[in-house]
Image 1 (cartoon, rainbow, N blue to C red):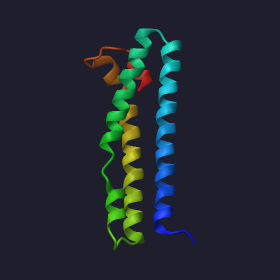
Image 2 (spheres, helix red, strand yellow):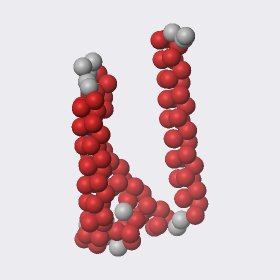
Image 3 (cartoon, one colour):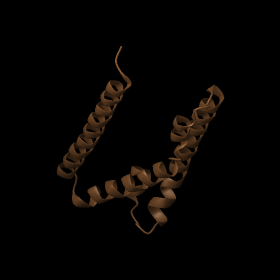
Image 4 (cartoon, rainbow, N blue to C red):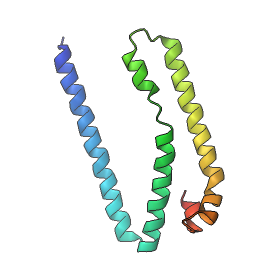
Length: 118
């Protein structure tokens, strides 16, 4: 049986490895997009990505961290956080779908192609 420290080191190593892989894939996809798209299209993709990231940031409430830190959390707490995250994700998906056209046509960006990208 492995010790707690060994398990923590192994878990942290996997976490770092996956984070580096995620960043590497993101960088690679950005380089590929930069080569394939003209500058105007790349700007539209950048604007759409920033809007999607902003919406995702709104959904990060940190309930999962609160559950990890709570030694008395039971199944009911985990179920509630899971349900809240799923419902909030659905609300964000609906909002993104409904607001894509107004954002693309009447926003400060003034790009009609932005609505199809969002």
